[in-house]
Length: 495
Image 1 (tube, helix red, strand yellow):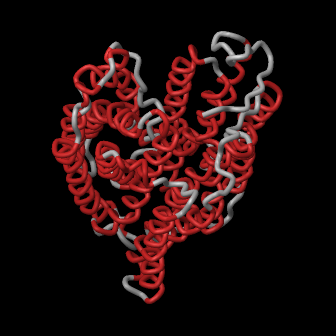
Image 2 (tube, one colour):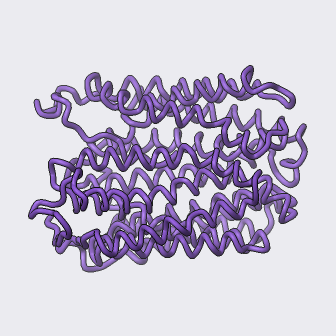
Image 3 (tube, helix red, strand yellow):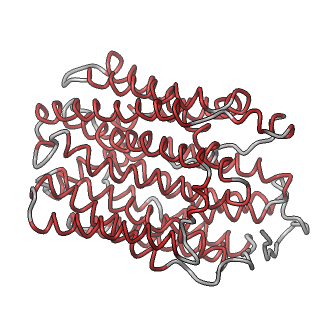
């Protein structure tokens, strides 16, 4: 892929050096933009019970929409965003995403009703979809080839820290001031990112990018995901009402049309050719099960700890820190191990270990202490995740081939987000967490335990899928791949 790059500062013809002043500025801008979105996505969950009380939410569905409104537009627009950046300029789209995200964050902070907050979160998801792929694309286009892997690794580590501190920081802001501060916190870094990116980051684009955009596919994806999400969430409160049935059927029809358009269109945003590899398809099926389990547990656990165990928002946010800490410490080694022995073992064992952690959460009852019940479960879950995520993402990217690495990354991110979206909509309904049960500690405990059984089944199913469908392509690797120069799963979908 050729790129029409113009570089600034102390860059050379091949791009900027990571250790140069220009390289540090590019890294700061891309980390600042992505980190803002990643931090926000994990911090908001901790604030959900407080938001529900302030707005008088009578059922769990309102809180589900605060999460799913964001994930809906993020999942639907992230693939289109990559195409827009290639065509119109990656820096331009990244800056548009940062500004859009900041404005939507201000609207979230100023919301005076729950529907207003949901609409603002939907807008925020669009901004996140615009800026997230643009940050990695800017790194790829800006840094010289010798420094790209290190730059992506630095981006991954720093944004991982932002993801890790999100629940803790969100809980502290809720307890110390207001949940609105979580959204206001995005504004200063957004201004700084815009200033640095405009002055110090070069524009780049792909002159070979398709001239036409898949707007029809995008509209169908939004309609399909939106219709099904609405039907699944509102079924808990309204049952099989005509509106719920109509939106569900419309959503299914739109998704069916989306598949047809992508298979026959001349410029699909989801090219069917990337699924020609059985390994790529298998990796994405495992992604569905693993990230569906994660989406449900991270949505429900922090609410459960506050509603049923009486945790403050800060304590609930801090309770999940061992998961992210283990991910940060162990993921790089997990990726290196998978490179040596092949991904199949870790992708088979890791989800089963995750399932063990989720089953341990069934032991968490009102009145229990953190060390006795909560900590063991989140530690086992974190170990399973650290075993699974790096080889899972690396397998999806490698299976598609270097030519389609960008598309494969976008597809894998979209699959993960859609799985989380569906899980947050479906699993509470399946577990009986409907209506006002989320405000009743006893009822919530029963539903939470059922939900953890379901998520454990999903995770274990991912391990079984990996045993059956994933192969270890050791024999097919070139010597250079075996030597350790590999594509790490650093752009795994944020947890």
